[in-house]
Length: 282
Image (cartoon, rainbow, N blue to C red):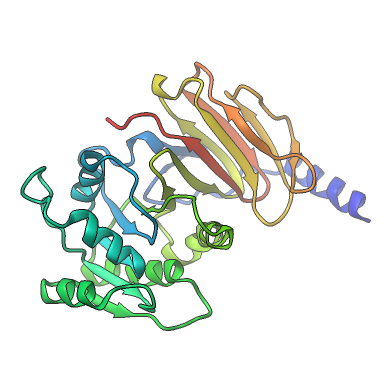
């Protein structure tokens, strides 16, 4: 029966009509293809929300300050509040940190230090206790962020969560789960997971075009199915796929690479994680 089911899915994928165009703010839809520009996410003038999660910040100080300063709205998530407090303490006058106070501080506060919470609250941050244990602090934060964006009538093109993929494996997997369900929470702004060396996001069912530049040549990327097998077709990668079935227990596309082409096209019949090594930011 599994072979029959897979054959039916593959047939639907091959014969499917273009999916309905949905105009999400962080990317453009043209001719039923979603256009992505990951290397321009934090360019000057970009509009994005920034979250600091509970992992050490491994960016250079200059890069971290650039990412913080360019954000339209900023939040720290539980233990990420301590991380940012200690990172930013005393540097605002040295390297141009414009305002170290987050707009939102959220979490169940089992990790955040009381002194950090009190300091930020006293300096204007909105501190929101989210005690629900049925969701992670990361997921609850993007819910609070979504509410805050509506209240401020603020539109952002992306939500970027700074968090290294280190430490406990269950935390890493829960972050991927939040990436997967973020569209149902945030709606018009996709969620990216940003480390000092990579950026990751979800490509939902349909056609995609990812734009890079010569900085990405020979850099690694990966295409990982989320929760269920996915049939994927690609062009522009070192190891392209032609209706290839990606699944755990079978084949997944890790350690793939960009080529000298500046555009990668992809089509998938199920959500997949796309992750890529970061070249230097401009």
